[in-house]
Image (cartoon, rainbow, N blue to C red):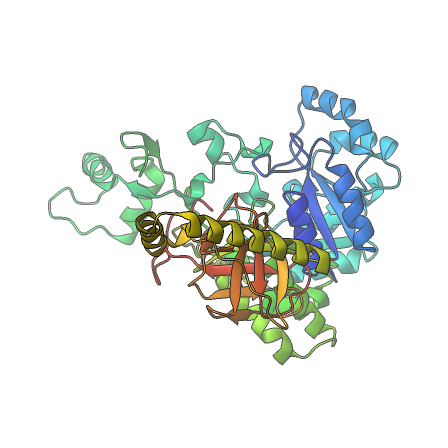
Length: 508
C-alpha cells in the first residue's frame, strides 16, 4: 500500500518524503480547499523539482479540489503554463467541469477523484473510471465492507482512504456551517472550523417556550422531561446556540433522528488496522493535514511508515511499536476508527482543541565541514582575545564593574567554544526558545528519539563562534552536540505552557 502524506509547503514536502511517505499531496494557491495553508506559488516549483530528484520514485499529487466558479476556471486556464513546471503525477479533483481541461493540458498526469465528491458505491466508481479517473479517494463515510465490495466490482480502480487526522462532521466534508456563521465558505477553502468552537445551548428560553406549546404533556412545574419530550424539543427549533466568543449571537439548533447540527468529531486513527484496510482493497493510505505543522507531518508519517514496514515484514512489530507510540506526542484529539467498522463509532464526539506536551524547537540542518568549523573557531577566539585585551587596558575599577556585569548578565560574556573529541556541529534553525539548561530531544527518520541532557550540547552563534545561553526564531545558530545526527533530524522540547490533562486552545 502507498503511504500518502500532506505537504502545505516545500519544507513539509521535504519532511514528508524524508520520514517515509511514498507520495505527498500539495495544494496550489486559490485552487485548493486549504487556501489557509502555505501552499505553493511563485518559483517554488524549482525546489519541488529538486526534491523529486533527491527522493527518486516518490510521487506528487496536486489538489485542485475546490468547487470551481467560471471565473476560477478562467484563472486556472491562465495558470496552466505555470502548473506545468511542477512535477505533478496526479491531480485530485471534485469538480468534473475541469476534467477535460486537465486531460488535454496534462495528458501524462493521473486523475484522482477527491473525497469531496462523496464516492461511496461501485456504480459511481465505474462511471468515474469511464471518465478517465484512475483513483478514487473514498468518502469518509464508507465502511470496510463497502470498500471490499467496490474493489471486487472494479478491481482495476485504485482506492485511497483516509487513515489519520481530523474528521469533518459534514458528509464528505461538504460543510455549510462555516459559511453560515462566518461567511467563510469551506467549499472555497476558507473553513473556520466552527464545529470545534465552544457552544452552549440556551435551554431555559427554549423550555419556557416549550411549556407554552403543545410539546410538553404537562404544563405544571416542576416537570421532569421524558425522552420523547426531549426529542420533540430538540426537533422543534426552539433551542438556540451561543458561541463562547460571540455572546448575544443566537443560532437555531435542529436535531434529527440520529444527528445533531453541531458536533466536534474525534480524530481518525487507523494505524492499528492497516491489515484490515489492505484486505478490504485499499491501495493508498492518506494522512490528513496540509495545515498541520512540520512536526506533525514528520511524526505521523514516520509512525505509519514503520507500521506499514511491520505489516510487510520488513521490521518486527516490536521495532515498530515505539514509533507508533509517538503518535501520542503529536497534537491530537481523542481518536476513533470512524465509519470503517461501525457507524456508531463515528457518532461519538469530543471537545477541545488538539494538543501535545512537545513543541518543535528547531530543525537540524547539514553538518558543518572541517573548514567551516575552523573558521567558526577562529572567529570566536579572535573576539575573545579582543575582549581580553580591552579588559587589560581598562582602569581596574572599570574592569571590576565589567566583570561584575558579566556575572549578572551571562548573555554578555564573550566565551568561545572548545573543540571536543567526537562532537559534531549542525546548522540549527530555531523555531521556539531553546535554553542551554534544557534537556533536549532529537527525533529522526532513523531513530525514534534521543534525549540529550544539559552539558552534552552547546549553542554556538553561527556568525561569531561564541557560546550562547539560549536561542530562538531569528537567531543564526549552530548546535554542537555529542552525537552524530542523520539528515532531517528535528529537535523538540517540552512545551512550558503544557499542563497534563488540560487541553489548551492552541488554534490547531
